[in-house]
Length: 80
Image 1 (cartoon, rainbow, N blue to C red):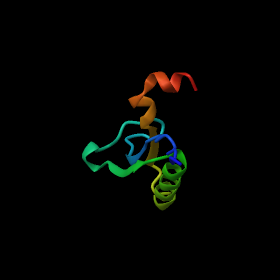
Image 2 (tube, rainbow, N blue to C red):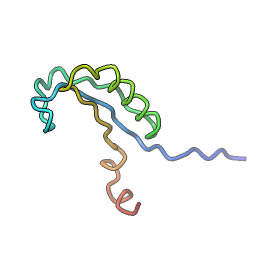
Image 3 (spheres, rainbow, N blue to C red):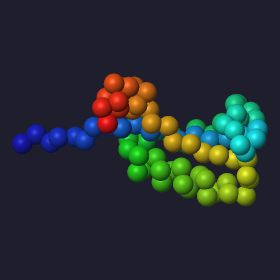
């Protein structure tokens, strides 16, 4: 019997210090924290949450989850 692997839905988690809390422009792009690429949203969200909670004292620090699978296969995500 062949094992069916679930489709990889890659997600990128990264963050950095923002110039202004109302925007998404970073103060210093060379200081971006690339947390990693994750195989599913659940693990990406767990990594995002850990980083966000660890930097809660800095109001300018923000972390984001990017849905890489939507960038890699834009037609597939339009159907969802």
